Length: 317
Image 1 (cartoon, rainbow, N blue to C red):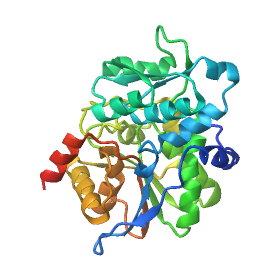
Image 2 (image 1 turned 135 degrees about the vertical axis):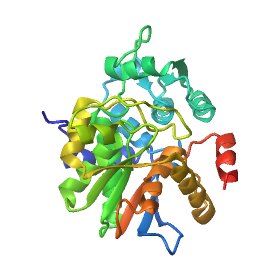
Image 3 (image 1 turned 90 degrees about the vertical axis):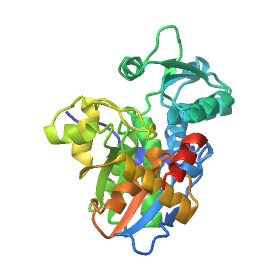
C-alpha cells in the first residue's frame, strides 16, 4: 500500500499558485544563546490567515473545475484549514461551509465568519466522521480534505522548498502532526532533494495517535483530550497517512502541555512571536533535546490563539 502519489513535481508546480495567496514566510533563529541546538523558526503564523493552511487550500481550489467551484467548498476543520478555505473562497467569490468541532476556539470561528464562511459546530466524533465521509448531510458543496489530499499536501510542501533554500545545511525538521498533510508535503520535498535530513512529526501528549500508531505498526485509537493545543491532535490516524509517515518520516516525538506552554512563552518573550499551541509543539520538542543537536528547523504552523488563553499562558510563568 503506497500512501500517496505526490511527487516533487507537484510541489514545484504549486509554488506559483501558492504565491497568489500566501507569503513566503521568514526563517529566523530562536533568540536563546544557550539552547540545546541551533534552533530556527519557520514562521507560518505570519500568513494572512495566521496559518500555513492558506497554502494547501489555495492549491486545491486552483485545481477545481468551474462546476466544482460554483457549488462552493466544504471543509472539516478546527479552525485553520477553515480559514484557509474561506480566505481563498472569498478571493474567488464562492461560498464556503465549515464543519467544526464544538470545542473550536472563538478566535478561529469568528475569523472564519469574518471571511464569509458558514460554520456548523458538531460533537468531536461527528466532526471526525466528516473526514471519512468527505461530505456532510444537507451541504451540496465540493469537499476539500484538510490533510488526505495530494493537492493540499503539494501546497504545504512549498514550505519545504523554502526551507531548503533558506537553510540548505539543516539537519532536522520538526513538523506538527494533526492529520499528516503538513508533514507529508514537507517530507516529500526533502526526500526528493535532500533525503539525509531527519524529519520528525511532533504531537501533544494529550492527543498523540501517530506516536502510538508508529509504535504499534497499525492505526491506534487514543484518548484525545482537548486543550489549548487545539490545532492538532485527534483520536486516530488514517491508514494511508500512517503508511506515508512510515515511508517518509524518521519518527515522532511528543511534548507535554507544560513544555508547549513554556515554548509559547519563550517565543513571545525572546522573538516577539505569537504562536498557538500547535505552533509551539515543534519548539517544545527541540528545547527538550529529544531531537538532538545540530541545525533544527521548527515549523511554527499557526498563531491563531484566543487572547484569553494566551493571556493565561503568558501569566502562568
